[in-house]
Length: 287
Image (cartoon, rainbow, N blue to C red):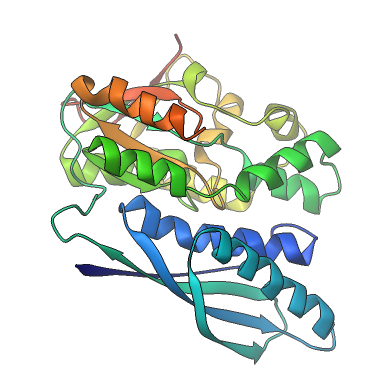
């Protein structure tokens, strides 16, 4: 038995304090799940200014986190609060894992297929929420996806035996895929039409609701990604920083059907979005 330990702290991404706490907990748990681990205990961290955030709202943040942790069989063993002008909440998670069964982000093989378990768009949707331009349907959808645990997807990975995995968070789909490529000494090709995206995200992009983090991700990856036939305005969701995003999974072709069956049995969406290959860089194509 070995330990997996991680910490993640975020600022509010939604208005409802209970949802914020719940999402922050799911987001923190995801790092353990991405390695194939089982969450065990959690320590909370909450920063807020009591003159700006009522104590009742702070309690609701913790209430949301406790609910999410309980549903994922993870026990809170302590925490800490500080006074700070900007609200921040996060958790340190400790989990267990078999030392010979750790799923890293660097084990992909040439020809491995790439799967994504949640749609993209949380950063763009959150920007639209702050700009008071988000449609109610998109607001409901992006909150729902952020509250969905990656636990079932992780169980499917462990059950199947996959090559590599990571969770998609602040560095965007392309940023985290690039980390997998660099760690594995490979490149990748993605089919943009196969990549799941929340309904209404392109309309938000057209309205200028692109977060600053997406621009930073694009600038960092500009020499690593090619998409010759696609306009930039139709690629922003690929650079969008995600909160509580899905798992990005590499699996050998002979195990792909088993993974799809395992994901389907656990009611996890199945999206095959591309393939790893020897050619360096990430190429985006349209099917």
